Image (tube, rainbow, N blue to C red; front, side, top):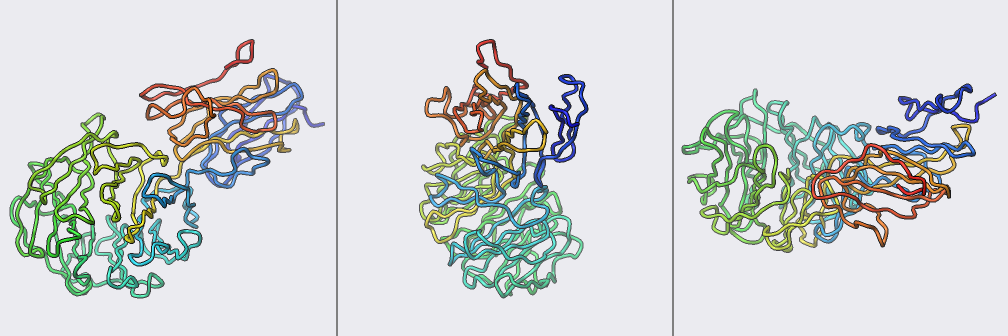
Length: 489
């Protein structure tokens, strides 16, 4: 005879035992999806129903009458209003998506914002309907994808660190790829970065093994770029090229020397170079797509943490202004080609050229790419994040009565579940999301810190009744939940 109180495993790896509540024989059942799932709390009611709260990265949990039907922490994101608001776009159709171990790179067709390419885990994916469907081609670890602005059917992809000399070219819109010639670049080094001259698309500029190279014939042959001091040759050397999108022949090159970071500038297509000011300590350097001579850099904060600094130059790197950036670092920065006052960096947005910043609902460090059409379309990729799940099972431990997700675009981690005298279900945990579904009269409607606590109340049928943020300006966590004699948490 099966026990009234049953144990069950979450994704076959965690057994929740109720031996302390009953000496009867226990049974085991499984619940979970294709991602990483873990149970963080369990409770039972007087009828023997079992309530489980947990943390999940799965997008295919078995749900029933959910209050929230989807995990919004997807790999791909989309914005139609220059990053003011975001929507989860989905995940690339790749068996390794759930265990994302490499960065996803995105390139958008300069003539059609619905067409973009994404490189991830040894494949190049293409969509022609803004990410609703993808085709794919095998390609070893694409680190970056470059589109010819004059002929979008021509693309280049380099494989970055780990695959020396690997450069690929497609002339049919990504349907097939061939190994591009790398004559002139040592076969033993990897191509670290690759850019295309926006005014002369046959010219490609690369940093390989810490040195600079240029091809003027569509990657058929390469020659090393002659650079002045303080260039340091080798791996401890150059970082990457940046083109002025407005002024033909003007480009920049960042490098790391023994005295720190430096910035070189050429105004004659790379024939001659001068050193200009580089007060920043690294981070992404980008050129304004609309205004000539405007450069932006996002420098990480001091060692040990603390906010970073955003740098802006209006004279091609001769002088710089700096403004506080609210986070320690952002790995990606992009300027809106339709309104260069709008800058996106990681999970933050500025609408005044980087002077002030506000957090966005993506709630994590993302890789950002504006569509060149200049109509506010943005695609982004980021690490998959976790939501919590809340599930109710019948006393047999396997009959699902309801199951739901709860969370936002950041990370949620569950900590506990309790029932009050009316059968309402209380759950708590920590969150980094700025878009958590909170109540109209919540105690705290927006998070104050990097990570805050959340408290949520569900009906016995699993519908969300109330929720709020709790916490201060730093990092807040919770490890357990208990209700008092009045049924209050």
